[in-house]
Image (cartoon, rainbow, N blue to C red; front, side, top):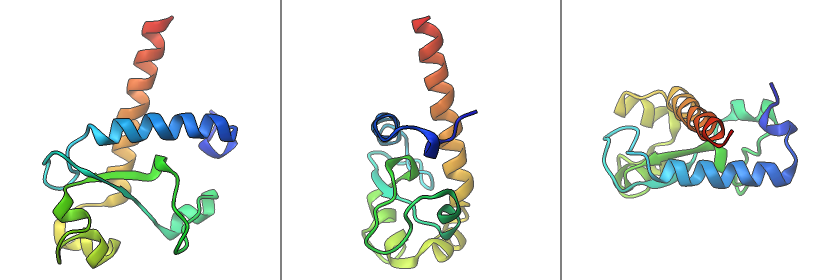
Length: 118
């Protein structure tokens, strides 16, 4: 199976656009509320896969998580106020697992669409 990093930049952009549109339609991973803000998830573990993770470097859209506005960047309980670890502890979520579940659902839909086109 080919990995995201092995794709051409053009195909990475295609996947990013499709995933961003998909994530925008999903409910918040914590509260299940809609509409959502799209949070670019940063984690040091993504550095080993070649994703930019430093300050000032925007991760690719394939690393987006849908969050309610109050949980994204509005208020003391938001991920921007707390950081990843404290956010996970406060809200009882595992961001890596949430991202993995979203990716599984996204790729399942992509395969379904591809099968329908065949």
